[in-house]
Image 1 (spheres, rainbow, N blue to C red):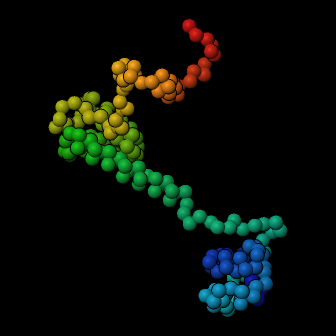
Image 2: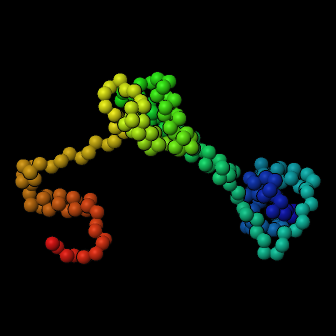
Length: 196
């Protein structure tokens, strides 16, 4: 049975994969023995051959169809990212409410107006942090607990005391110093290797 894989790809992608795998080709016209296909695909191939096909002009020589096209556009990706950012931003606002930000219409309006004016209505956790910091600094937000809340952060690593350092063995001290120096940024400026 002769099958045009390019037309088959456009009409039924699952059947196309089965026929292309059996034929060993992925473009052009191929001869396929329906008995080599699984039974479900044999019936689908018979139905496909029985249906009228649209006459499309032949593609120019050397032309290849793009293959598996994405089922979504870049606009869909951007919209999904915007929704994820908004969700994370509103969770950050909830964090501030737990830390003492009053849940009042005045606070909501002040925050919404600021984000719309300065960030074109784009909501992200960073924008919420910046907006709340600015608005609370200028007294435009009310809090039930005094002071400006700080954004959620990981606890800093515990500091090593001199007594703890002195109790370490020499090998442990060297390993600790090496690890601390690895955390320090490397000076890539001039005067390489000079000590003052």
